Structure formats: C-alpha cells, structure tokens
Amino acid sequence: MAVVEAHEPVTDGAGKCINAGDKLPAGTIIRTGAGGWDSLVTRKGSEFHLDSKSELSLTSNNIATISRGRLYCSNRNKEIACIDTSAGQVKLLGTVVNTAIVRKDTVAVTVVEGKVRLENTHGSALVDAGKRSVLMAFRPPQSGISVNTYKKTAWYHGRGDYLSDFGDLAFTVKRDNIFTEIWMMKADGSGKHRVKNYIGAAEIGTWIPGERWLSIHSDSIIRSRPDLTRRIASGSSGSRIVDSQEWLLNAGTGQNQLLKMPVDYYAHYSSYSPDTIRVAFTGYYQPDQNDRSGYESGEFVYDRSTGRVTKLLSGELRTASAWAPDSRHIIISSAESHTIKHDLVIIHTDTGQIRDLHINGTGACFSPDGSKIAYCADFKRYNAWWDGVPQS
Image (cartoon, rainbow, N blue to C red; front, side, top):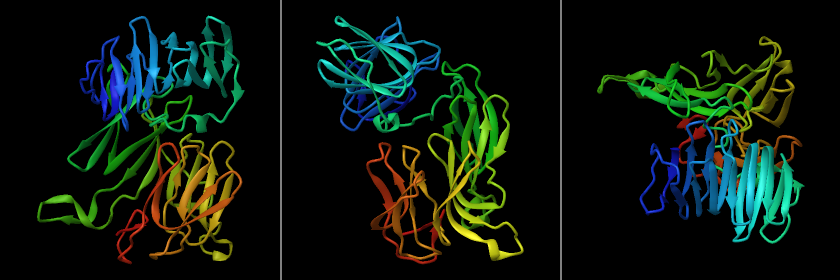
C-alpha cells in the first residue's frame, strides 16, 4: 500500500512514524492517534481512509482487519475480500463501505455503494447500499435500516479526491511558479503521464462518479505589474492576467472543458458540490446585455443533471460561497457590494431555507465533517480584497 496523506500522529505497530509517500508491505499495522488520520491506496486502486484513534492491518490474502476506530473503504475490482472485526466479518461485494467500531463486540457498518454480507457464528445477512447495520458478536446479523450515507460518513477526509472509478490517480507539479501541470498515473505508479498545463495555480477538485472527468480550479498568480526587483512575473500587486476558472478535465483523453454557465447566466465565483452534481455561483442573469430590465443578481445553484437554475439569494453579492460535505448546504456572506459588514448565512439548496448565523464574517468554509465553520472576521481595510474576501 502507498500512503497518500497522513496527518500526525500516524505510526506502525512498532511505533515508527508513517508519512505521505511511504510504501507499506502487507501485514503492516497502521495506527492513528488523537487528531491523526491516514489515507492509503493499494496497487490495484482500492482506498482505505482511517479516522483518528483507529487501527488497521491488511494481510497478503487481501483481508483487512480493523481493531478500533473508523474505516472508509473503497474496494476496486473486488480486490479486498472482507474486513475482519471483533463482531464478525464484513464480506465486500464490490463495495464502498464505512465501518466503525462502537465497542469491543459491536461494529456499525454503513454501505455507500454495492452491498456487503455480514457474517458471524450466529448467521449472515446482506446489507444493500444506503443502509446501516450494527453487527454484534452475540447476535445474528441484520439487513439494516436506510440512512443518509453522506451524514454517516461525513468524517472521512477527501471523499472522491484520490482515484477515479477507473483507477486514475491525479497529482500536480508546479513549474517555475508560473505553470501548474496535471499528471495522471495508476495506483501502482504505472502509466505516469502529463495531461494538461494551466497558467498560474491549479487545484485538483473531485472526480465525477462513474466517469473519468476531474474538476480543476485554476487561478492566475501572474499580475499585470510584475516584481521588477526580483525579475519575476508573479508580482504581488496589480490585477490578474488570467481569471479564476472552473474546468472539467478528462483523464483519458486530456480534453479540457471550461465550466459553462446556462444561457444568459454569468458567474463571478463558482464551485462544484462535493458530489459534482451541482454548481453554486455568485453572479447575475441578464438575457439582453444591452437592456438591464431583466437583470437579476445574487447566489444561484445550477443542477448539471437537469439543467435547472435556482436562485437562492438576491443582491449584488461580492463573495464566494462554499459547500458543506453533504452537497446540500452552502455558506455565504449575504452582504451586498464591497463592505466590511458581512452576515454569514447557511442555505439549504433543496428547500431554499436560509439560516442566519448572526456572525459577521466571510470567506467561510465547512470542516470535513460539516460540524464546524472557519471564516475571516476581522476587517480593518475597505479596499483590500482577495478572491471576494476583504483582507484583515
């Protein structure tokens, strides 16, 4: 297994630190301490994501054992046969599954995709996608109940960020602080090749489920006023030469598509939902560029699957929104124009319900589990802005 990300403390069975980039042999015990977490990828592309205070090992016969904590497993090409626990076995049938040790003899299993077979000495039961079952060592397994799998697995860092459903692993390489290259390879390191160059900075987003399309956010670091003292183009003053943009990049063909807004809609800032189905954007609608009678500005959500656009907030908004991990809520400042007073609100994108947090802040984002919010709150200058956020 290869370690993709590791947030300390993460150690092996002997107490040696495990770091990103390490390659671990079969049988290695991985332990995460308080505040630590770990993400691993096998040679065939299966993924393991460990929460804090967790312990995992993977044997050479493709059986994983979780002794404590929480594990999110994406099983690719039926590579992993089962997950062993103290309460019984979780047989994987081409599955994405979340397993959490409740106590020594009890394990909660949430099936995100596919299905699993739970087995112990008292019997067995099939659990389908969208259901959660509690496996107990002293009782026959049950088929489970329907749950919101996004909510149950919101703790997991990096949902969909590492591998496509076809086993493509994406990473970035920066060149001379001017270009960013997007590279692809398989989980075993084979097939490494450059797919695309972007001017400025580029960040890898999420894979579209079932496809080889990857969302990319690009942003210019090149300014119209270069730093002549250091003789570099990426000066810290002036305006962007290239605007911030959202792209879809195909890992197989290298085809690059700029995110297209629906007809007559224009975006200042935009972002994909974590499930990549919808796009939230701050902008405006104007069917006739020479006539403002039909002009509407605000915060909108564009559903890529239906083509429908929903207006969530009205006004000349100047800040970007951010998605919650559940792909249903966004957070944004409701203030209009460039000001230092910003009321943060959370909006349910399905119902349009608005919840005022009574907090003066902007540039907000959710924690990976959706339980906390980070934001900028101390505005001292009126005219210093960066990506829609007044700087402190």
